Image (cartoon, rainbow, N blue to C red; front, side, top):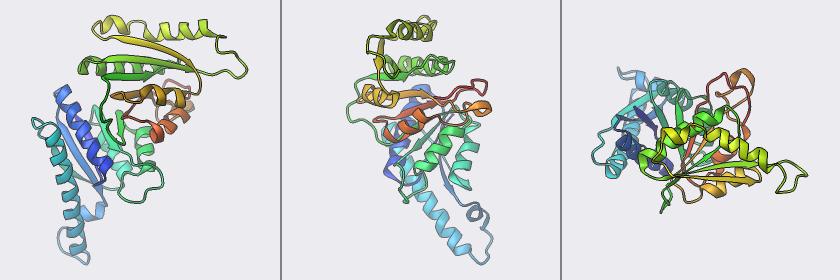
Length: 281
């Protein structure tokens, strides 16, 4: 199942459209969720604020109806379920993600007060969801038919590539695997052998499991955020890992993931990394 969280914003509608396409490709059910205060869902039997609660529920249903219409326009064959989720949107979506294969959310950046799924919510959900997360700001007008995946030589790269290869195969597009490296004081040609080894080891086994996927390898000296952002421009999807610190690795976003949530030029897949991986990225 894919669940998409919407809030009435343009980014939320774009997320609904992306989720509908993904549900059609995967041939899985789609659920559209919108979070409102828990007391609003519980205040249905009269009481002091019954009219306010009814008005808020109607507003929530309108948000869901708009998202459902956008999803059906994108993929008419998809029949989404719609649901009002009670509570803080971050907790509600994280709880819902535990029963999902993929969670899709909209993100219209930091500092925006309109709507529910602002940047802080996207950060919180992507860092703590029980499944992989795709964050959509806007959809590229003319995607070039390519998935971009960032690898860094850590154990997390295996999960990132498993997701990216599967997506590329599902869509029938090529996969660009990018390894960005930066060592202060080193010339661009220094350390190339080590970086090629990292790339070779990261790809080991994946090509064999997905022989139909055309793979492009790219090793670039530079900051990962800048390198991956440039490589992903115009692509269908950018795929990265969600590695954090210590015992909470995989549950807290690393600095690269946090930056790309705000600056990725295309939909961003944040692949959940299991807690046993204890490095940061």
